[in-house]
Amino acid sequence: MMKLSRDVAGPCLAPRGSVVAVGAFDGLHRGHQALLAQVGLRAEALGCTPLVVSFEPLPRAFFSPTPMPRLSSVREKLRGFAAARMAQVLLLRFNAELSHMPAQDFVQRVLHERVGAREIWVGSDFRYGHKRQGDVALLERMGPSLAFATWVMPTVLVGGTRVSASRVRALLAAGEFAGVEPLLGHPFSIEGRVGRGRRLGRELGYPTANIPLHGRVSPVQGIFAVRVGLDENDCLWPGVASLGLRPTVNALSEPLLEVHLFDFDGDLYGRRMCVEFVAKLRDEIRFDGVEPMREQMALDARMAREVLGMNPSLAGA
Image 1 (cartoon, rainbow, N blue to C red):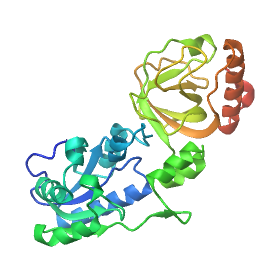
Image 2: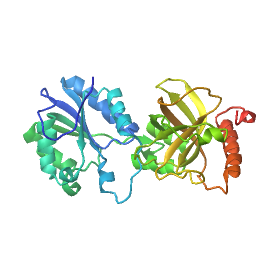
Image 3: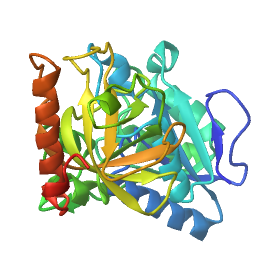
C-alpha cells in the first residue's frame, strides 16, 4: 500500500534508498506517466523504493494572483501515483516557508535526507528552491557528494508537439476534448461525490446530480455532453452537464458541476461520480426567465444525445 507523508522534517522515508520523481504532476498526462514508469523500472532494478516528491498547493497556484485551473484534484493525483505503483509519496505543503528554502537546502534536506535519493528523475525544465534558482545543473553538481545520480526524462511528443499540462489546459479552454485525450491517455474528467441540491433541475424536467468542486478551479466551463461512471463502475452512463455559476435561477458564488443522466431512475445522493467530458455544446448564458432556459435545456439534451450517438428524439425522457 502506498504511504503518504506531508512534511520536510522527519525520518528518512526510504532507508534502503529511493528512485525519485519530482514535479507538480497536475493531470498526470502521458509525460508524467512515462516518468513514473521509468522510476518504477529503475527502483526495481536497484532494489530501491519508488517514490514521488510533489507539492500541494501547486507552486504556480501559490504564486498566481488569480486562481489557477487544475487538471486533477489531490485525490485523483494520489490515485494516479498508486496506479503507477509508487510506494511512497512526499506531498509537501507548499507555503511561504517552503518557497523561501534555498535550492541547495531543498536538495540536501528533502532529496537526500528525507527521501534518501539514489536516482532523481525530472523533466528538462524542472525548477525548485527560492525564486526557482535550482535546476538540473545544480542537481548534477551536488549529486556525487550526496551519492545520487540525476536523470532527465526525454520529452514525450504527441502529434510532433511536447506533452505538457499547459498545452492540455489550453486545449480544454478551447473545448478541444478530442485533442486532449491523446495527451492525457484518457478522457478529461472531474470526480466528486454527489451532494444535496435545491431540486431545481427536477422541477424543470431534468433532474441533476450536483457535484461541488470544493474550491477547485476547473479548466472548463459551460454545457457539455458527458459520460459518467458511478462508484468506480466501468459502465459509463450518457448525459448532459453544466459547469458554472447558474446565472438565471439561484445564482451561485462558486462553480458547480450539475449532471443529468439520460434515462436514469435512481437516487444518486452520496455516490461518487466520474464525469468524462466528451464535447462542449455551448457557453453558459443568462436567460430572461425560466421558460427560455427550459427550451434551451431541451435543445442541449437533444444535441448531447446526438454527440453521444443516441436517439435525439428521446431528449428529455
